[in-house]
Length: 304
Image 1 (cartoon, rainbow, N blue to C red):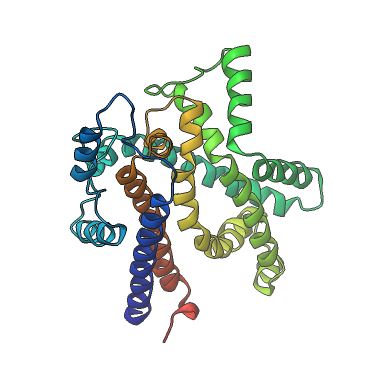
Image 2 (image 1 turned 60 degrees about the vertical axis):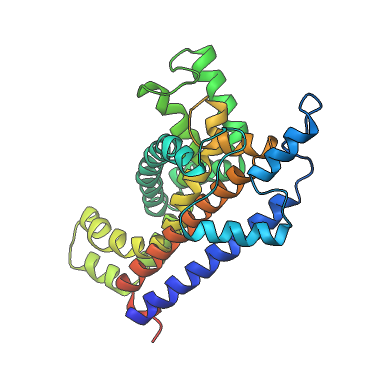
């Protein structure tokens, strides 16, 4: 198990290194100049470039940035003068994380429950209805569902606030929109896992012994169906958190997503690279933890 975990850690570190390298050079390909302004003297623009190290050759900038990255320094934002990227992440990420965790919590419960119902009532109307819901949840992006939900429940019915952050009423709509794709994905995955387990001999034996349907589902079918679901948990967590970019814009939530979008439009190179590396590393770490956890749950996948 130690060798298996060590190999996964090495792969994770190489992935983060590759991500940082690709992000750095791609950001340099963005057209424009963050300091280009006719109202600012050329001498001032040159001083600004020198302050951020943008006057040096790109290769030299890369080695300087990677050296700082190893120290945990993601640079200083160009738009937020004097503020480090780490400080911006520390201030705004908790809002995005809170929204993402709430959405993920309900998405996991509802998705697993819907998947169980689909499997138990397969090829009957509950299965058809829920699968149509799952297909729509996967097909419709947040940028379509968000404004529609906001208009219906916030503007027309006035049941919930149309935006903002702070009260539980303001969390309901963005959490639902953010978790909709996860609910749909979990419904389909759980249904497939349950149907694969239902046909096993030990399930037939449990039913032949007179075990109640509830105990069969809870003790045997659900327990063994959740093991394959672990493989999707890492990307699912990171996907929900990173998917909040669009949702935060729609519902005016003061999270980290809006800063990522604004960083691209304002050519804030340190913030672009810092947030990309941060979210990418988060995804890699979640996958790493799930891989290690999966190795404990299912010893067959361990590398000898």
